[in-house]
Length: 115
Image 1 (cartoon, rainbow, N blue to C red):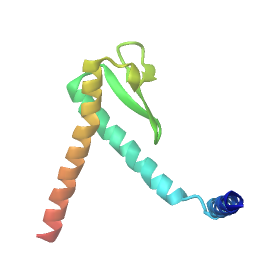
Image 2 (image 1 turned 180 degrees about the vertical axis):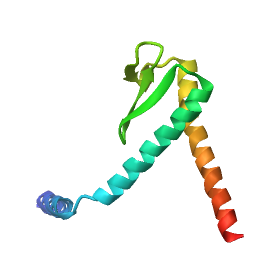
Image 3 (image 1 turned 90 degrees about the horizontal axis):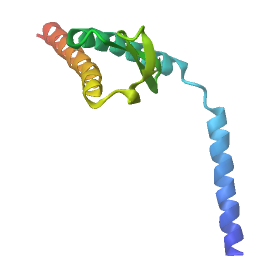
């Protein structure tokens, strides 16, 4: 009896969650903004990466997946997980440097505007 009540309560909660999830509109503006910022980050990261090495470039497949382009191997695209330790360090350093430069520019712009 008590288990039946718990089961019915759980089913009811699941049904409500499914109705809410189905009724929520897709947030296309948010997704567009995220994709735009991610593309910009990849562009800036590639600029930083070209200063470090001429071998690799990054390409975003989507917001969750990125590939590395091996320019010394006829532009072969491969998962970033296939890079060696040193290669991985170089490639992962470039987005961090790009974010740092972007933040520095934003801070300078804020200081100029406000003061």
